Length: 309
Image 1 (cartoon, rainbow, N blue to C red):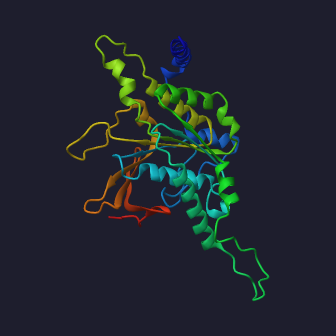
Image 2 (cartoon, rainbow, N blue to C red):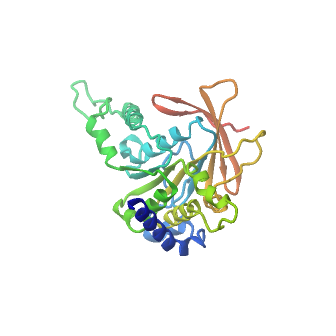
Image 3 (cartoon, rainbow, N blue to C red):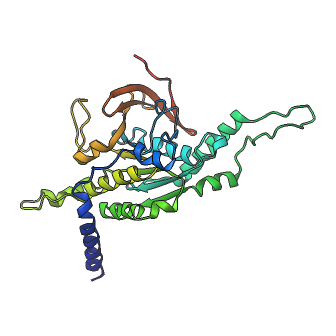
């Protein structure tokens, strides 16, 4: 009985959202959404990863590739850089993670924050002005527990076990939940592809209705959130079908998702070295921007220099 009531409530909420979902991608650009309110057009979340003057408010970034090629680790890097204090090279802003893959490793994330704080503190430590130790304040080389805890106060996470839960979470953010984070700059979704088959199985049955799917509604809401708030949306996706050759990037989530994406990072393993990965950045619609390799260490993602060839 209780299960039936829950299903009815979810169906009612989905019906309310349907009127917005039929024209899901008719949104203004993120830059237009940011400029009138005085928000910065550029969100310098990672100057080493993104090109100059990118990403902009409202940009949607896709981290795409097969399983086990560093997508989630790169997502952790972006979240960490968003919530780190300014003296450590971060934005000192809020980040929200919607975990659809259900593999978020909190201990790994805390260890990553500690490593990044330690590295930045060592690089920017100010030596004393004289031998007596009197002079400018020097940041501690070892991160303090309160520093990490302060960073974590700027981080929120929600686990989504179905596309309906993801839709309701995004709806809550749009309805006013995002306003609770006045310095929200990053909205991350890990495993946007996770519910693809569950979402499409009923639609593939003989005689099934071809109405818009829940996943399409989620993409619609992500687009509206990106347009209405000074945020960057970052989502990880995975190839849903095996391909024999590395042809052009194909999007199976929904056509509208491809319309939203501004930057697409293509991940793959390096041939001959299991510890190294390849990263290719595409701008939509300008095309290839760069290709570079990276490794994953205890301190997080270590990027190589940009391949200019």
